[in-house]
Image 1 (cartoon, rainbow, N blue to C red):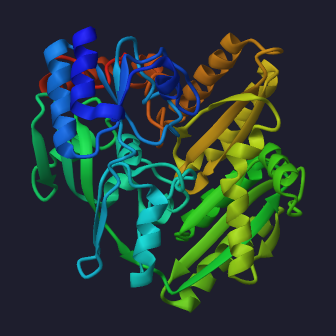
Image 2 (image 1 turned 60 degrees about the vertical axis):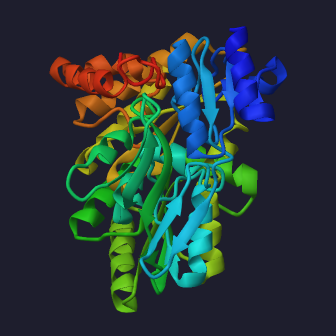
Length: 446
């Protein structure tokens, strides 16, 4: 591979990382680790991405796209002999406040879009918990959601136009008005094309918002309250939950006076009509109290932000309980939530492992985290439990992933989750758009 390395150096100079020390960090995402890649390239323009794809095709080398590395399913973890395409230097952002859109390259962090839109009274709704570090390219690859997804939708709902480089090295910039090829790429985890830019919709900032925290004696009652409130027609902007393990971990981490031993529901309503905003939150409050919750309303913006900081701190807080974790990501019908969260808690007890549950409960997207210490607990048993949690979702009419993707972590589960005819259709699409199998091979499809 001497010729490949020489060509990469000629094309990209110091942005072609070839030494083991330089490449090591690119073996990881937030959960899994892979072999050392052949090289890591940090392109700055779509033309450079095209040149890299053509080089890889000439040598038959796989390409693995990577954003900020905050993924949770191994989607950006390289295989043997792969070139990692790290998009962090493609970070151009252009706002069109009159048209209420933004053009963003894949390395733009999610939070930056809203921060730069705010002076114009606009915002970008998709807000994964890692929004200060995660990048748009990764969000597009996984079709990420976030706390606002119940009311406002997920990443793909905001894409008006997509630019990508195909497996032949040709660039395409396509809208979604009639023939939605971009819709195939969104959520495909970089297996069908390398995204180099997107035009996304921006929305006006709502004038009012109201926030509460409800503390329940157990997580099943919390899930029941969510189902009842939504059945009454409530459409909160955010509806998030923490089980008692998460509550205790965040309290240990932040020391903000959270009620230990309780499951927490965080709810926020927003809009331009204050009366409607208050009425919706009151319905959530009444339903929560009916099921035994103690309710605390945020008195002002500062208190509301503190509550949402608690939710965004769950992941780092859980690291204080055990050094390693497997972050599951399932989605189930809301009517099944009470049964699902109780079954998962019972599974954790049966396996003798710590399972912490949190997530976007408004749309049934749960994140059960299996916490473990490899010095004391067998990792094989952890993955057995992860598979059983996936089966709980499937039994109750749910799916393997709400937003974290399939990647490497859940690829083996796909044969249980998807019928053979559908899998064959997926393989046909892959073979058509990537006939040489060079774009993120070994991901998603079993």
